[in-house]
Length: 281
Image (cartoon, rainbow, N blue to C red; front, side):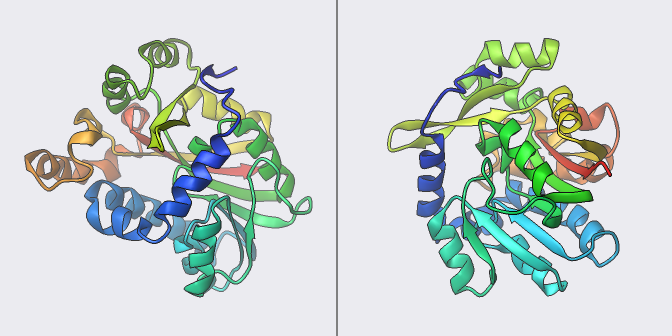
């Protein structure tokens, strides 16, 4: 069992509620106002481009946690048949209204309404698995709906990194949970932010846990890349949403991320892991 509050029965309601409220402003907040997240999206796009420019993946793709359809739109422009699934009704509505989504489904990743082997790839960008406390159930479902040799590409936040050490002192991650991850590789359920005075569970992973879960559900790890590697020495709370001195310093450190994020041991201290995996044939 993951250490932390992983028994919260209503986390799906909290998450869907938050993203319903954020649907109209999500892109402005995360793609325009925050250089921190622009950097994350830039790194995600590099891997996206490598795998979806018509070379390695065939035709039908599930955009898991599609939100307002940023990645759906890019996939459709490349000629793929994309099914967009999200727990947030308002996010999907915006996706449809903007004509990014042509095949949208509101649902939960732990119970996917699709046939076995229905997809050639699953993309889960935007900390999708961090929002699912019972991540094992979601990975089991993803493995079921993927065809043999299908790709799963996703990003997750790392428990054992300098930024989470700061967060453990602020209460988002318990000190005990952080230390357990550091010592024995167990993940931890901490908290994202408050919504209507409720703390939303947010699952943080270790590299050991990611490898074990992928192996357990029939995937092999193709590559793992770190995002916010050196910049994680500056607490993200100090540079996510402002343009001050800390933000300027962090932006200089971003310049080293693309290189260091590819190599051990540097990539293991990253705030976010970008993972490419493939279902065993």
